[in-house]
Every structure is written in C-alpha cells, then in structure tokens.
Amino acid sequence: MVKIGDKVRFLNSVGGGIVRRFQTKDIVLVEEEDGFETPVLARECVVVDTDDFRARKTSGVAVEKVEIPVQEPTKPQETYKPEEFSGGDKLNVYLTFLPVNIKELGKCDYETYLINESNYYLFFNYMNRENNSWRSRHTELIEPNTRLFIEEFTKLQLNELERVCIQFIAFKKDKPYSLKNSYSVELRIDGVKFYKLHSFRENDFFEDEALIYPLVTNDTAEREMLISASDLQEAMTQKVRIDIPSTRSFQPPKQQTVPVVEIDLHINQLLDSTAGLSNTDMLEFQLKTFHETIAKYKSQKGQKIVFIHGKGEGVLRNAVLNELRTKYKNYPVQDASFREYGFGATMIIIK
Image 1 (cartoon, rainbow, N blue to C red):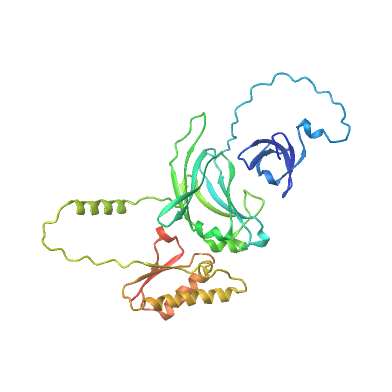
Image 2: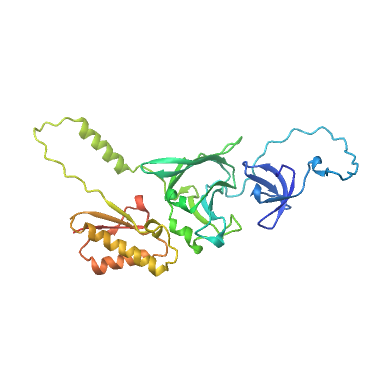
C-alpha cells in the first residue's frame, strides 16, 4: 500500500521519487528529482523505501537499536498552491483515451483522462447520451496544469460513448482572476478509431500514444452546445401560433413530416465481430448495407436517408459518394447536419 512519504519507482516507465500527496484515491503525486510533481496511478508505483518505522521490524530477526532524534515542533503545513505557467490563463482542455495494452488493440480495455492545461481549477461533469437524455459518468474538480483519470471501460461499452458531453466552470482559489464562460462541449466519438493503431499518437501529456479530443483551445470551445438565434426565434413563433386562437372555421390538414432514416455504416455497428475479415471484406459489407437501405426505401418519394460513415481516412465516405455519383445520379445528395453529425455523414433524398 503506497503512503505519503514513501520512496517509489514507476512500474511501467523510467523514474520515481517521493510520494507527496494523493490527488484522488487511485492517483498519487510523486515529486521527482527535478522538483516537479508527477501524477501516477498508485498501482503503478513500487515502494523502494518507506518512512514507516514499523516496516523495519522483521519476525525472528534482530533489529538494530536506532536512536530517534527529538523532533522540534513542526510548523503548520502551508496550504498547497498549484504552480502557474506563462500563457496558462487561456483555457486548453482535452479529453483523452489510452488503450490499457496497445499490443492487444481492439481486445483490451481503455482509460479515459481529462487534461487541464491551464492555470484554472475546473469543476466538471462528464456525461454520455442515452436516447433523448444524458447520464453523468464522472463529476470532480481537476487542479490546474494536471491530468485526471476518469474511468476505465471495455470495448463493449464503446457504443455508450458515441456522444459525450463535458460541462465545466473555471476559477482560481484565493486570488483574483479573469472570468471565463461556463462550457458545455459535446463530442461525437468515432468508435472505429479505437481499433486503428494510427489513431493513437505521440503527445505531450503521456509517454504512451493516446487518442486526444480537444474540448477548448485558447478559451474557444471546439463544439459548444448552443441554441442558435434562429432556433430560438422559431420556438417563440410556434408558441405565439399556439397562444393565438384561430378565427378560421376550417384548417387544412398539416402535412406530416417523414422522419429521417439514420443508417450507421461503421463496421462495429453492423457486425458483432470482424474476426477473419479483411479491410476489403468489411468495405464490401458496408456498401452492401448501403445498397440494401436504398432499395428498401426507393418507393418512398421524398424520404431522407442519412448514412453515417465518419471521417477517418475517407475510404468509406469516398466509396459511398462514388456509388451515389455512378448508380444514383437522380438522388439529391448533401452533407448531413454538422450540428448533429459533424463532418461524418451524407444525406440523400429519394426521388
């Protein structure tokens, strides 16, 4: 069991130092030789020396008598104040994923971290989308210029993370600071990336390769959940229409809006397992699903279909667009709503 004051070395990387304090119940801050404190998972620390006198006792072995010097009264412990860095008054926040064992990518579990590269404390709430509501996964306070372990999840839980949202407020303790906006940033996580080695890259925050999603860059949210002025105006107009009684004796029936059909072409959404399949096999199955969907709705004029293909390397997207150009020339094609799907979806209309 790692305790404050223990001298430790890191299990999975070079380095070590003295345990100064616990950042969370699972993460300790280790002061290395250069004087900087490094957050490390407690289970990745090996104790090489301890300040616990009881650890020196061994059953059946004589213990050398040690004179314990009389200690002078200790001074009151100073309140911890995080170090601030030049340029750190601009918020830069990242959501990061790491495989537990990158050699077994696609089979192993994954870890989630929040990185706060700023001089501000962040109180945050990490959520995932469930149908038409949200579920909180982790709520905590992260200190300035630190990374914080949030959770570990399995590949089967990837579907839960297709849409996530991080809300947070920024502040400083015991000193004046510039007021920051509160943030509510929504991300659409591409599950296919978790199966591709090149998605995990070298970075400035971890010794291992990681998949990093920027949330806020220099105080600007990457994709903030906001209600646009046009949406607000439309909602107000609809309310006025409801509140004002109609003077006409006859109202023509309203044309029913046909719901948009969404088809996710990501292979992990179409198949439970891709074992034994080559990239060509998987692409053929995705295009087969694409053609079958159009055939199913070809008699429903005006039907809108959104095919979610992701950005990735563009292989699936380019294949879908090529099929539309060559085999479905009479169908109007456009990028699907960026607000809903980012850059990773295409919409067609059946004619």
